[in-house]
Image (cartoon, rainbow, N blue to C red; front, side, top):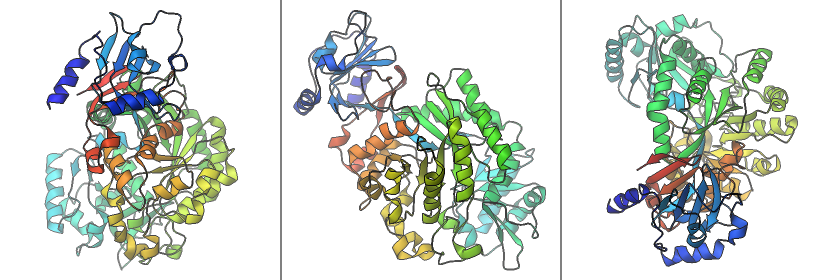
Length: 580
């Protein structure tokens, strides 16, 4: 705590006189050996040597292979003008310069998270939360209490259970919610968002009955008598949730306040300066909410929106709409330049698209090999239509068949200039590993969640067998095959704290990667995925000053110590947006 107070006080002193290098010999040596001459690392200007902000005495890891380490960074407004030694930085300090002595602390480029759900995860549009596991009686009490707390809500919208809890319940899931709330529609999103638990009133308002057919990319859960059981899998649940959300009169304001009051401050506190919204529901007003924050000049992140591709929508109608929403201007913090597709569902629902059948057959799907939100042929159609506009695709692929079909679609239809990525990558066919580099497809993985740890791999053996349950989320295999690897969170399925992700990435043997690879995946590679690697993602002269200062040297820390790293300061575009 004493060190933190010292650092904070030095941050507040502008024009602090340089008192020599206070960092250790190792830092001095590495900085001297890896820092090239000032002439190659100083941006030449017409002004006399002067700067708006100077950082010295740091252990600065640049993620620039040509100059990996430095002691000092000099900023002129929002741009980096020097990356070098303390001595080189000294001539930039004037009476108007804010001089920050890092006192040996580590500086990195700002972290990127290219797969998260920021509006959904922090909005109070979701009215209540239920336990992941509980008895039928406990759920009845929880939901009935929530109903009493929201007496005027036309829909009761909850979150939090696990699908296994419902499948193992002796009571009918439908009957449980009907007993809790018989007169109003109830919908509860499962933790991964890949199923919804509803009551009879919700089914009625959605026009669903035992005679209804499964929608594209979804399944209506049924009991042994072929009656609906209250579980709506994948896109069957998405469509009903869409109806529920659109019934809320204040959903947009809840989304807006959640973004301003919680999400952006907490992301900045974690050192995150760029994100991709991986499911922007443009029919729910999500795009308008983001645009409002941008127009009010309240963004503290660089943001790329991934417009949701609705599986049930007419292709011509949807393609025309998506094209009309595209916007990309490097001068702006907000970009609308990605589209989010689902190829398949998830393993625990038996809806992830697999080459071989599941060992359990819960849903009576044709072939018992999962489902497709979008088929390969349909994805090819969207690639051909949307790449000329400038869109990159963020493609959900969990099963080996879904991933394979996504790669096929890109190989068959892409012009080769796009930066499409496949995200999640739980079960990857070994034959497909080299295709990521060959096709220039970004491999986006999430390892911050405990469920991705190798100790949990056996959990899937009852569904897919021991052979397929090995090497889930194979980040090392992908890196070994020269894939461009990004690491992200899928928040709120997993925590957004990048240090948890870094810790897990370097410790999840046999699918672990080096710390340098993991940092690059969270910074420069993710900047590439967002088409901004020429502006941010590494600490280099001429780039914009998106920077983070942390309380320890990650390269001298154990995996557990990395997990507990604290951010001391975060800068976006040369401005301090978080200070501990």
